[in-house]
Image 1 (tube, rainbow, N blue to C red):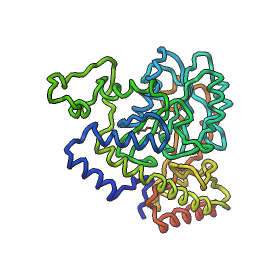
Image 2 (image 1 turned 90 degrees about the vertical axis):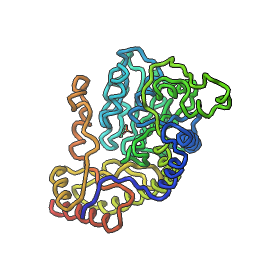
Image 3 (image 1 turned 90 degrees about the horizontal axis):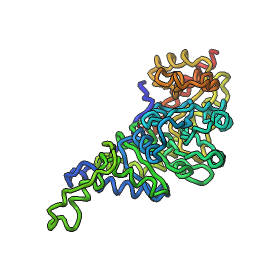
Image 4 (image 1 turned 120 degrees about the horizontal axis):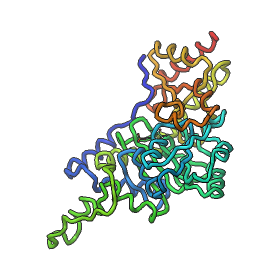
Length: 377
Ligand SMILES: *Cc1c(COP(=O)(O)O)cnc(C)c1O
């Protein structure tokens, strides 16, 4: 056996869309990106979406939209991928780590209140693994404390909390289409919001600050009679963060399959949960709701974590750990403010093969391996 941890699920639909891009011979920022943005808006239910080359770029730009003064603070969970906190540093802001809850590994809202100071201007909740932060409660706290809310939905494309799509609870939602995530464009990201005025400038800022993208300039009706059609204005400092049409072509096909893919992942999780239900030493990493929800991975907790990782590796089963707490990373050590729960519970985390093309045979093989490991403990 050689069972991968993550793997994109891609096929003919993606290829058909890419063919359209090749036929048009326009690979960069163009009509496919616009189409993807439009369909993303419709799917998530926001007023504006902007296609980017990553969620890292999305988080960077989302914070930039507010023009916070240098040195202000942003609350981020201690357990997340690096980009949630590097986006804070890119903006000359200071990350304040919030501890996680013991049982859910999700941002602890009580600790958030404890860590809050007058310098805090925003919070970036992360729906870690697809487990939703209780956004109703968070929004209440944010309102009270006057914090802007940028949802990091890198793990939760298509996710819903209390009937409302994740990414629409906060002021801005940021999504990742990196190849391992719920849906992919190879690399890619999306920023979306109902506050058009707030995020509109980010359209230029994803394109080196240029106010009109090249596709729009070449398509404008008066191009033929306008010798100045090449002209554009640069009023803002921007970055080269745009999505391109090849990525958007893949993204459109993936978006059309997203609900189906999230359902498949829930069914895999259901099988895992049944398989580990009666085990002595192994528990799910957080409480899964297999009836709804968009989960990025299936994880477990084991006191014999490292031993189990090696045991599975020797059977050809790839595993991972999501995530090593950021305050323990050298880059973030200066901001380590004591997230005791995170520092404890991560030691038990194992992510199991979670991609949707896992066969029943592979899934049964992994579950059996875990059961056998548990029986010897
Ligand atoms: C993957 C990830 C990101 C970054 O996504 P990219 O598209 O790879 O830049 C941001 N936040 C979290 C929580 C992630 O897991």
